Length: 469
Image (cartoon, rainbow, N blue to C red; front, side):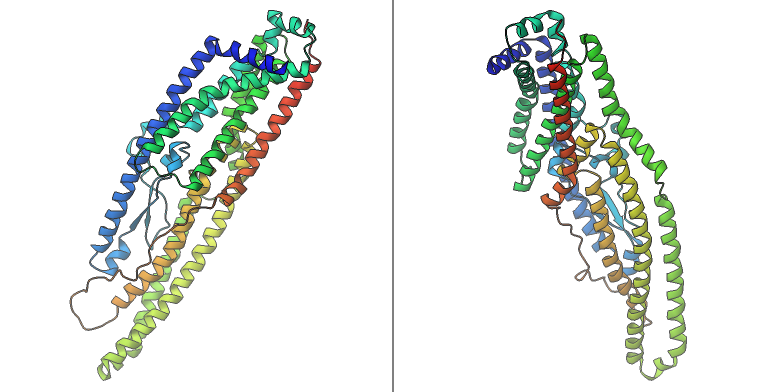
């Protein structure tokens, strides 16, 4: 009996105009998003290689360490191959970070800087299509699953033939869910084939695992709205009422809750602006530089008589003093910056965590945060990149301060020698492990699973008591 109900439900939906429309629209959107993602990734890969090459040439072209200290070096963020599926915040936060002694690293040159119109329409990726379009179609497929059968009189007829109610609702759920997956899986499979054959798009084993988890989250998300549709359909007596209720709930889940959560978090846990933090750091740096110049001048005045006796020994002692003083000043600067940055990052994480947890009431937010984490295109990846830049800046600053101060020694006048970059620290960042990502996404998976169980159990219980007359 269950098999027959599933088969009948699939036949009815597949032959309906709404399925044809859904399949055509989803196929166009998914294939278009795959094409846009592939083109965008290849362009970003080319820009990344060009940016790295130009940055290396720019550093090598600096005439002195002093010039290098006043000229920020540029670190480019490598593009993520899974950004073709889940774009996340990659295009809005910037792709390049200038590193200098005087300021903290921050991302610049976002795609929106070059063309603000992209900020108006946003990116078209698979996550957007599933979150916005397919969730609406899940409602369209289920709003009349029970109440529609009642209005047509077929529900009373079916149950009068000793069809068990549990098998009836289970059969309609399975059949309808298979039908909503077809417009997703077929064009998605074609998109994956296209990505595999395109040059420069190499998926690692970790990428495939992340991709599988992203698709699993898509299935769970659609199951939430599908179960919600069954519940509302089994609790109403008119299909128009069912559709209006589902549309209202969809707007609340997808549109309202995520935005309200961010506003609420900003009011509950306000944090200082990044400009205030940078101003404090700049003021402390300037004070240290003044103290350092005064200290060097004082040492020079106290020991300048030694220069006539033994210039070589004088220069060696002066260089030694500069190295020791530079390390002390760098240590003070690092300690101050680390303390103020730690406090700022802690407050920001608290606010960010509050916003995420509040918005997770909505399955749409859970889908967004979960898939972005898995695709490494979310807030956490951006924070991780900036944290690695701050760590690199400390290492780079120590190296550069020593080089600049050594050149400041009162050695015999002459031309400035070409800077030596052989021992310059190089930036590197390790990819995040899949286990670390899973720890963050487990709450999103759990939330969706709980919602599916609760909503479907509610639909099952409601249908068991449903008045078919």
